[in-house]
Length: 305
Image 1 (spheres, rainbow, N blue to C red):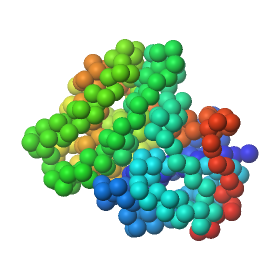
Image 2 (cartoon, rainbow, N blue to C red):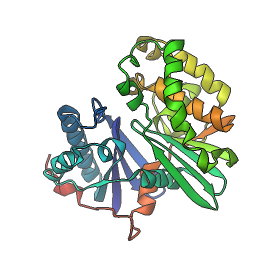
Image 3 (tube, rainbow, N blue to C red):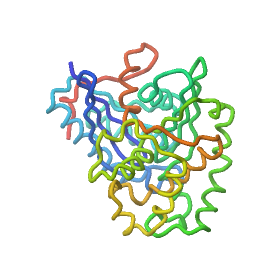
């Protein structure tokens, strides 16, 4: 039986359909976390996200998926009104699993990493997870993301250019959070792997891709390259949109994700990062059958649009 999994993130909703060793992925940008800086999900982002989930489940059913899973990450788990969003989905026949930050981190590691000595960084819209394997996998999730940063400060507007003053303010804001990853000792890792939209978009830029593809898998980005691309990304939005490899729906938040990545690599001494297209979607399906995982499978044919 084909299995499908949906990841409801702060920035987008993603569907993965596993067929053998390959996974077909689809994405709809909904900005669920938009306007949630005060701790509550807003009605319009919730509505469009619920609609996106149902649309992707219909696609999954059409492609023969018989068992589906839907999980949510930072935007939902941190919201005061997460139960309201959960009911909105339940009314449509969707069973939602809200992942704790550590579990979100562990499935990202399971999807992307190969083993001992790997460190993985997953820069999401609302949180950033770091995982390091030294004998066992240790993970931390912190409230730091590419959507959360501009949402917290009105002056951090991803549509305008980012000058040196805004960059310094952003770096000062994130520095204490990045320091919280120090107990994991990521600097001892033999390799840093990057998953999610920030590193994959940088890889697309490096490869000059007109449209995103799995060709980004295993692309190596040097820190100096990232700093050079960072400078390009500080231009106003209309100029960013002219750069090959940047998706329209990510162009406004990408600079903030890159600042997080560059600061993390600098702090922990990484000169390069290996990009992985494989991430938490693949990782979820490797873990979901474990008795203590808490997955909630259901038939995607049963949903109400």
